[in-house]
Image 1 (cartoon, rainbow, N blue to C red):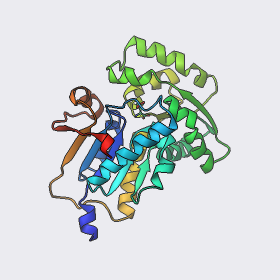
Image 2: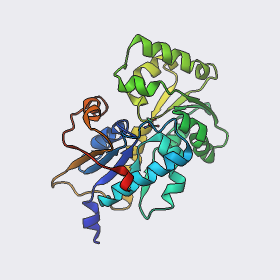
Image 3: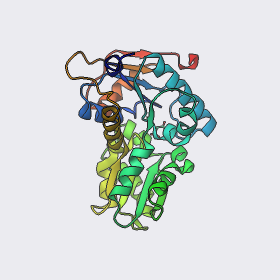
Image 4: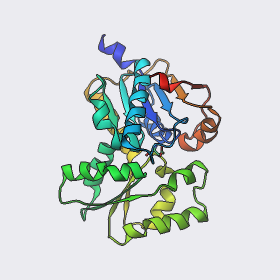
Length: 273
Ligand code: DGL
């Protein structure tokens, strides 16, 4: 296969559902010339409260599905899947796969001044300790404070973006992180960028928020460029969206996550992969 043919292939992105569209939004901004194949596992959502074995099995199938679409690069947009399954699953495939943990950890280390970093995410992400390990591998003096904030996911999906209830929950969750004097907070979940304003207000201006979706898109751009895999400009860009259950809810809330409407969402049987 010539490098031109590989460059033309789409980027594959998977997530447990609609949340990974925050990563797609950043890819659209940074790499507008790239085509995308997205898989949202809405039928088995959420991943964040599930076991390592289950998430690993799901991630394996999600990747298998994307590879059938001849993608040149795979992004595990889901923090829970990246945190608990990716190290293992990556070894099983002959494919370039990037999760969201390393880019988020890298950014946190470069931003913190007082070496005190907070991580928020789903239970699966927090229990895995993956962010803390990735941060301390880069700089072992950094102290990491991790906190699961599971209610943030349904709040973002239901459009409770700046409601009083969301502020109340955020204040309650985040007070333990305020007390430990962090200067950097990683939004370690696909849904949290939607709640940036609330989280930022509760944490205060001195705390820098790291958006793992943004950092991942930057990393993808860098890797594609170094490997000469960037799609040349011009030509038709096509985006395809697949889900593992009825697409209605996905399409209804996709606008909020992506900032644009998605048509043509196809339902697939992910258990075949
Ligand atoms: N996509 C998940 C994550 O980033 C959040 C939703 C879920 O629990 O599946 O961790």
